[in-house]
Picture 1 (cartoon, rainbow, N blue to C red):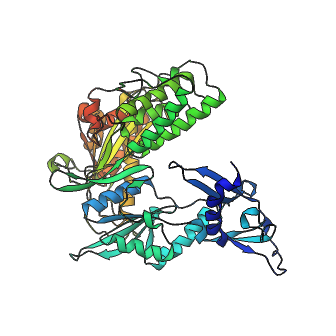
Picture 2 (picture 1 turned 180 degrees about the horizontal axis):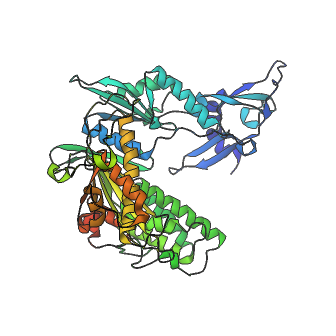
Picture 3 (picture 1 turned 30 degrees about the vertical axis):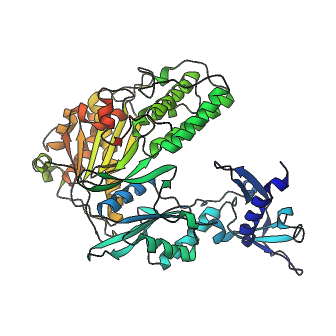
Length: 551
């Protein structure tokens, strides 16, 4: 394909990127300290067959710098904000900043020579790079700092627990105080407030957005976003990865078709029953297939991150072998895609409804002050004023003792809910080998408590009230006894750190632990690849997962 075929795409890109250059004319010289940087055009065809041209700098030839990252809000913060919006009856609007990096002045000192893309009049001229051109090392940082100045001018302040969540005081139509939020994922904006449309148009005045992108969010980070009405006239947001998964499956099937292979049919579980990847002795993959395996693991990890919790354990297990995958590992990754094809239409519903909790079951037992003093869990001194409604925080934790047949290390799994909405999930092999179920369960409890302490801090720094302890559920009676009765004694000295960490949190009223039967514990599927009552546990947080729909 010749240049003429791409002419419209090139002209469109150069019209946008021209502002990044100061052409040296009338005998002007390059100022001292500037370094020559090669630039070129890259081309792509998008999913809808639109031709895309991008003029970029060759950042590979620039020196490494300490801070080069663009602002990216965490996915956990995104989920919290959606639950916050639903609970407090706020609107959510989205927008995509147009030619984002080119709006920011460059902090780097480079110059280049204009190529044929600039036209015959300017070809061969020298030009200073004065805007954050794509490809330069600090382009993302420069844009983030430029956007930061705008947000501060509009009265927002950066959340100390997540720098890319911006918040400011507001009062709703009933006179209740709350916080308006702006979540920034590089150039993607999510705005939360009673007058979200006005908020996003404020930003649009200084950072013009693509007109078609302004509105209710429908797609965010690859997931479809919508609202659903639950029992009791409750409106909840949901994330649906089906479109992303369909494209991933289509790509996998195209790859397999080239090798005269295909995915399994009617797959009911993510990997083969009783399969243990750590003892797989099948031949190692060649370099090309290894790279493809790594890319598929990356796709699956993103699918898990965006809400498909039902495959978290299997993906975690197979992620451990990206450095040296074997044929057996590759076949199991394909097994996961076959499972997704049969269970594609799942939604992660962020239900803001308050759960039914019997408070008497979570009264703190005995006097803990004689063991850990009279310290209490208080908000940080620099926390903003707490506003709006408080969440009930619940955590379910489990461990699979000595499940790794090679190292005999255990696996920790837990899931955390705000009200009835899952906001965080975790499955990972423990870092040490525990000789007893008690030890592995206590390590899992401690890991969950560490996350809970961070979550409570984040909520407080977002201005959300956190006055009550987190309700933690586990299915190991010994661990629950140690963390619910003050005068219980530790039987395993190897668990001393976990023992005291968890108990200190109970004494400070950060969390309270209680027993739950294993069959009712949703975190059970985050420690084992195949479990009894799997469907019932998955339905605790995923909707429509057993609908088959490839249309």
